[in-house]
Length: 122
Image 1 (tube, one colour):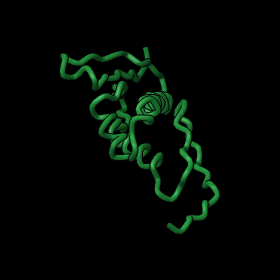
Image 2: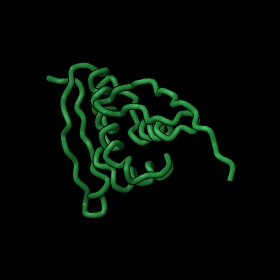
Image 3: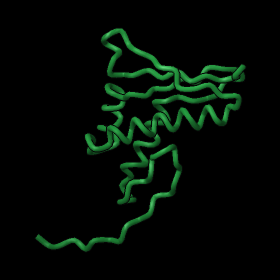
């Protein structure tokens, strides 16, 4: 029997009674955590084109986010989907970095700075 299970809520269906989906069972806390992060990353990637800032991305995620996973099991795994999403959204819209770090498949890559573009006088 697995020690951890993930259930994910679709925020866009909350007003209609809500819907939840089982997203996997895991014997290992690290595997469960990685899957939960992957689900949030996928939901953010889906919403990213509709957002112009980290704040907008989080607003979209809180209303229409298709994956808000919860990890059930013992010992408890400390994972909060909205906190993780906020951290990722902030990283995606970092003001010091011009390129967007990868959020596919839960990858945690370091963002690369793009070359500076000289500003033109108006």
